[in-house]
Image 1 (cartoon, rainbow, N blue to C red):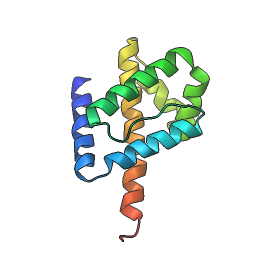
Image 2: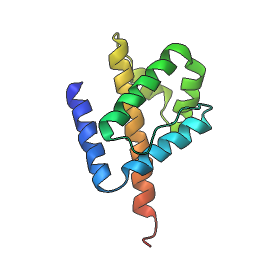
Image 3: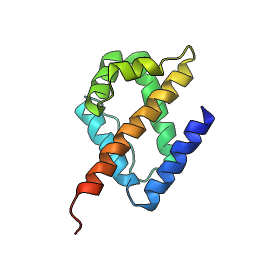
Image 4: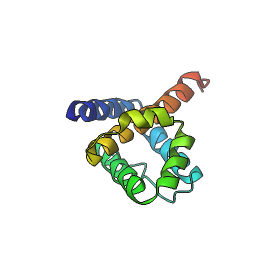
Length: 120
């Protein structure tokens, strides 16, 4: 699991070099708000801080707000089948796998939008 987290941090560092980390954070904020969550990620977070903040929030949702968690997964476009594959007997591992799935899906949205937008 540590290797996956290390890889995602490396990917986010690359995003920052491309000036897309802020777009990723904005996408997360948009999807959280549209899902009925009043949580906000500061656009100035570095990749490691973002990962930690997202892990914390996903853990809270899994434990305390399953309905809001489901709304968020629907909004982000992560299927129930994919979520079932992320389940583990260890809560922290499950939370980390779901966090990585969220970051991956949100990054896909940002990357695709950036790739297909006309250059100014």
